[in-house]
Every structure is written in C-alpha cells, then in structure tokens.
Image: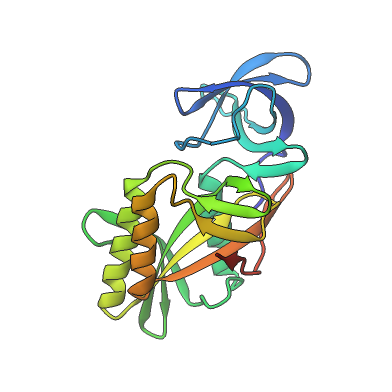
Length: 230
C-alpha cells in the first residue's frame, strides 16, 4: 500500500484529544496534524519523538498533515490504524495471505449491528475476517495487543465464534504494524477480558493469524510470513 504522498519527517510536540498532534516540521514550523488513532498509543507519543507525516493540499481538510508513522531509535511503527485494513485488502485481493483466497468484499454486515472487515467467499463457503493493527511492544521482539481495554475487540471475537458455530470459517488477523517484532501475544495484563475472549474464540474454532509488514516513508507492504504466537 503506497501513501498518496511520500511522508516527510517531523518532531512530535504533543498528542492530545485522541485525534490531534502538534508537530514541528524540518523547516521549524509548528503545526497541528490529524492523528488517526483512537487508542492509547502506549510508548509512541512522547514529546520529542521523530514522526513521519503525510502532507495534503485538499481544500476540504482543515488539517494539512496526517500522522502516519512514529520512529523510535530506528524502529518504525505505523500509528494510522486505517492503514492496516488497506494493506490487508491489497494482500487479500492479490492472493498473498496464506490460507485465504476467494472473492473479497469489505465492510459486510454480520452478527447484530456489526460489520466484518472482510468477507471472503471461497467455493460457496464464507470466511469472515477481522483485522487488528498491533503497535505495542514492551519486550524486545514481542508484539502485543491491545494497548488499552477494548470491549469492541472482545465483541468482534465473540461474533467470529458465532460464525464458526454456523459452519463458516472465521479469522482474527493481527497485522503487526512495526518492523522489530517476530513474536506475538495478547496483552492479558492490560485487558484480561480481551485475552479471555481470544482464548475462547480460539477454542471455538476461530483462526488466529499474525503477519508483519515492511515500512518505508513511501509505503507499507504486507509480508506473507506468519509470526510465532506465544
């Protein structure tokens, strides 16, 4: 997935009100950027952090920069949560996700008042796929999810389990949106309810998949190499 415009470096001054970030550009200007991440961004929002932002000249947009990547000592982390679905969509359509192939549709209604990120139809069998962007790492090489309590995430797991009970396949796909991890584990200390929901979903037949990406200021690329789950 290529960014619409190549990203430019900046320095994070502060992140606030969930969706706003004050940044300093390389020319010294201080501006406010859109921060498309409703989560806690644990460990990724300290003042002085190097970031990469996407400029735009869209007259309909009040903010002319969007925060896309945080860089920590050379490690790049995609903090725009919308990127994960775009990356996975491209990979699914290109047949690059191991074990998943067929006609791909996005944002399909299922369960009660829910929409699956993707529905894949393969030989008349439905495969329901939810995608989560993983940005947290508190131990070298170990990616964790979530970085804050998420009742919505637990709900998604329960709905996926319901689809398996109906005879469909269901997948929770974690996209590790940073380039320094080779292992994954649920962050049970942060949200024990979510961790329990994932264990229950796995026991019910929901497939858990974890894949990494390659990150540059120009693009984020899906890597079809399953990461080790702990």
